[in-house]
Image (cartoon, rainbow, N blue to C red):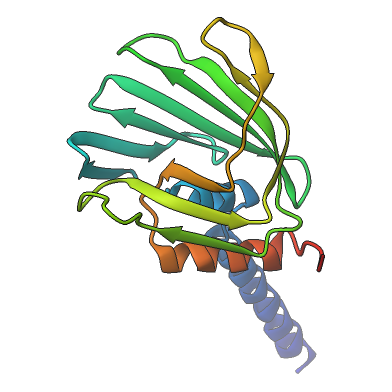
Length: 191
């Protein structure tokens, strides 16, 4: 009888371990969640036609990045790395011609601790199917932000209240991603 109890307890422990592994494999990382909120890109590549361009958005081998390829000519890489639950470095690089190396054009630190909401909308007058969305992140702070000027010098970024981004995300999923982010990574502050 004792042996049956030990076997049953062992089996229950194995099932619990498997459920834990399965549930953690479906969880999004902090960086993956930030990439979705900023660009609407998750595990699968997205091909979309809008604004007269063919745009392919694909996640890179690391979960902390997303690559954009426009008409196979222009390449943009946006990378995010977690510092802590609410702070993430961002690096944006671009190649203006096919097969040219990416050149960093902007870097900074995003502070999500006072973000109240993430909203994704299509601006009035935007052509149907366009990837340019209006991204409103109420309370997002950007620090240590530098942008590369045409003359090759670095200067402080001018950060707009409303960001326009290459984003193929669904507005409802963007809100859910923010709720998930707040619950699991960055509870933030009340004020």
